[in-house]
Length: 250
Image (cartoon, rainbow, N blue to C red; front, side, top):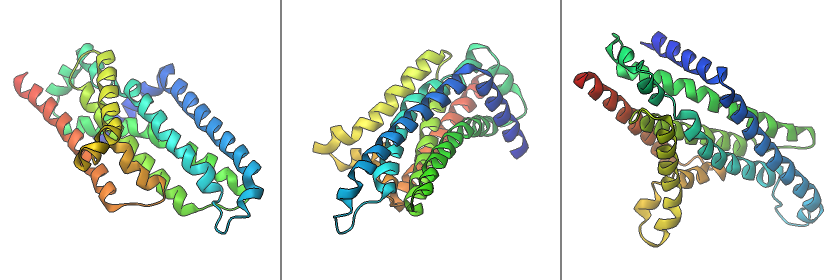
């Protein structure tokens, strides 16, 4: 099973990077993140003399890296629908999903393979962001704990985005509809934090970016960690059940 998962993941990754879409998004994402990085670095250098007068001044990691990862989380939220829209929807449209369903492999293997293939892209994005952050070592010190917390949080957040996108993509044969559906659901989970502020803390707990804030502050919160894992598993299981249902009715 594990071997087939990697075969499917490699196929998805190859299809992703054969198209100009992945390269375009990778370049745009890094361009935006680098622009934020340089902007925060410039502001930090201008305020450094004033910050030194404070008893416990924030370091470069707090002033530069934390806001950069916060922006990265929003950029990935916007990019995910266009990257995940074709994962299964295009298989339905090209009628190749019928072949996958009839093949002697489990739906779990197919879903995990597609999920893993897409996650390689997001891991690459996170790695490039971390490498950019490490460039600060050329001029000073860093809070590595805060950097690791942000990187782990961004990976979990990205995995949550991909799990949602994969499920929505399994519901339709039109990639454009899958993209709109994914964007709508992710935005709903994002603004849940704002809308629910006057209503219920239970609704607030479904906000992905709210849970990411803990990691962004350098706190690997157990509740947020468990939430992300359960959230990812829930949408992967929903996708598997959806495809299993098609196999049974096919």
